[in-house]
Amino acid sequence: MLNALVIDLEYWFCAEEIRELAADITDDQIIGSTTPILELLDKYRMRATFAVQGTVAEKHPDFIKLIYNKGHEIASHAYSHKPVHVLGRQGFEEEIEKSVSLLKSITGESPIGFRAPTSSINNNTIWAMEILAKHGFKYEASVCPVWTPQYGVPGAPLYCYRPSLNDLTIEDKESPILELPMTVLNMGVKFPVAGGFWLRTTPLWFSRWALKRVNRERPGTVYIHPWETYRETPRIKGISLLDNFVLYYGINSTLRKYESMLKAFQFAPIRQVLKL
Image (cartoon, rainbow, N blue to C red):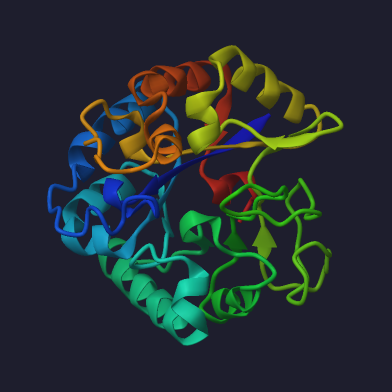
């Protein structure tokens, strides 16, 4: 089965836990942390969706063009990486307009896919779906169909669907936009698997087993942030033990896990998986 492979291309210091503490940092490590991932994708002849933060594209347009020219999909990860609820309706639409214009100027085509910073689209920010549809997006791929301390839409379908623009837990075949939710394994208890924090903190055997179980019914999604795979990602001091665990646990082994997933499964960009 063909699974979706996603790289959220954002600055390592954009995580909510350290955003204010890292406000003056300029060493973004984008090229250093992303190049090994591109090399692995070339090695295994895989292509992925790169959801690009606007400020990253603004600073590194030639690098984004290189990624695009390698055959990867370029999607939007908004502009500033502020959560949708922080931006509000007007601020979010302004960021979408900037992101679309910027990415189109680099690749020559408008993005059709969106990944919300911090998975911050839920029923409180559902108006964002209307704005995405208005600006030509065909899919959104960040709803987490279980509750977590940072995000989640409990009750949302586990499979790709067209959500009602009034309630993300309800399917509406007339909806203008597809939702590809984060991969969740349901074994009586539902929990996210094979992406980001969940890939870093769970054993490799479990991630592989879980995705195989998911593939009995539907495609899954593996997503990472380059900083999560990079041994040289700076460790910010002065944060809580919990935040330190959430941000840094497993970083030294994640690139190895990622390569193992590439060996074991077939992956493609989201737009290919969704046949868009």
